Length: 474
Image (tube, rainbow, N blue to C red; front, top):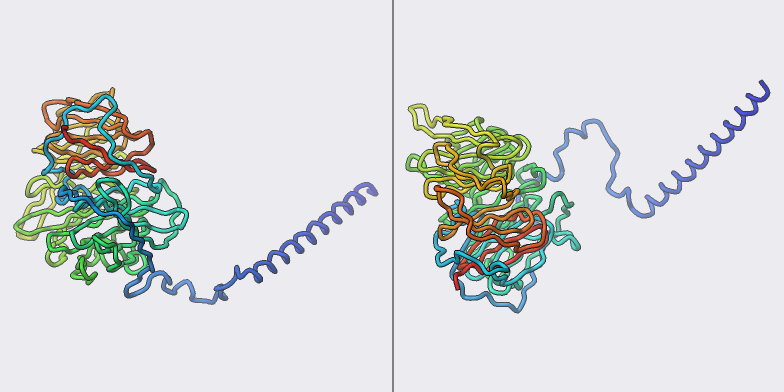
């Protein structure tokens, strides 16, 4: 008993010493906190505080003070254009391009310029010899909208505004939309910024998260803004009250808003225009379905839950003819063709066919409809061609693996990039896979940024580098 009693006394003394030590440490930490202001802004918790509105959800415009830097660089006189994500028709086709080379030198197509960029997959819009992109400046912690010379890759101007973004499979991942007068970007935290296209001067900003209650998607915003023929910016905040909206590009004035009756959240997918029943319509994939919105009024014309991807809906819809829409995505979603049918009760959405992920699908990049056939990189990495009835006509075979890379069609040629920066050129024909050239243009990784082309100059990028390649037949 005496031995146990002595041991207990030792343990008790050690516990007292440990408790005293913790009290001293906590007191020191509290003193440091009050001296350094760590507790500034804290307030006593009171009953009912959980019901207060989120202070970030404000009303009225919310802008962030930015900084414009101009450089002594002039844009070249080049007429080619690729004005927004997947070009003006949002179909991934460069219809004005011609005279592109059918074969490349041994070391690949010539590199006109190469620049470093921040982590991400944000790619380019091209207009009037200018290349527009949204970047992220990790050192200064802010979005960086850049206007580059298409000839040299040098910055013409930069517009910076502070916003903290933690790296999450990159930061920026959207493509600007540009007119001769203004350029619009959507940043990773859903800041919509409109600048003068020539000078970079600030015009207006919308903070979709703060003003509309938008929940920024996982891996940040991937929706690319759309500019219609009237110069209106079309966005899908998919927030507390507004599903889609139209904004005057020149002024930032809201033209119409579509109520978010379905209660959907924003996805990585972008808005696509469609002509149906004599009316221009905008098609958008929300978190739990697809909707068609009247372009003139913002009226919700139809919606369906037949197509939805709960984790990450990334590819945009593909318009097929006058009344059909093709959808695809990752996470084993496969693909689907829907048809719109006008009835006495409104517009009915009918499912035509589905295809499994192993048959025909695309995880990340939006497929291209070209001359009646759909081209996509399947989840197994093979390039595939399918007719609009759902019949797979060919694949590039097991010897090819393009990963999650982008694709683009110009001058009857399909260009496909793999994850590591290997660019492949093939014929865009339904008769079979006919590869014409292949070259490692970047020694990088995750070369997933959508490609853009203007006047034979192809803009490509991986996680940290952007290149301009010369594809002209010299």
